[in-house]
Length: 202
Picture 1 (cartoon, rainbow, N blue to C red):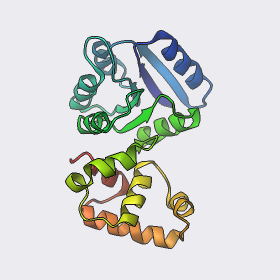
Picture 2 (cartoon, one colour):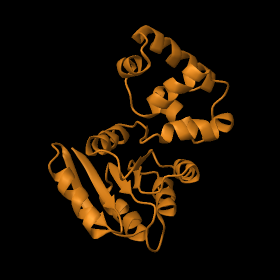
Picture 3 (cartoon, rainbow, N blue to C red):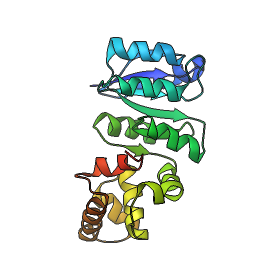
């Protein structure tokens, strides 16, 4: 069972998310709050698997709430779900410790997939955020990747399997495996999740 804390200052949007998640097997909303300060406290009380975090919140804003939650060292993974769609916000969210960034306009299936991915320890950059992170921060965060390797990394960060990456790029799974090995070696990380998170600059 994946436990979720919903954080958004719009009651109707919160209610919609709760209704959506209530229809999903093995997913449970443990609380729904409207500000960052309450979110930080509720994480301490409930220790949810995933925190769905808006950025524009009264009181403590979403970025600061995310930083405080991550700083506690708890297992809760913060997934930003917001209308804010710009490179600086994406990078700032990742740098304070968010495990993913998805826009509110994303399809329901994409939001649910993102929740499952970050709950499982992965990282997700939905709605083209991965491409923007690579484009905007590549020279600071990603060392000397070829264009194809950068594409593979973007798809890894989007939670795609090797088979899905092969289909997306019209290459064989073996070719994808080779690219993944090169990406991990160049980034000096052990696995796919670390490669995705390395784009934070950590």
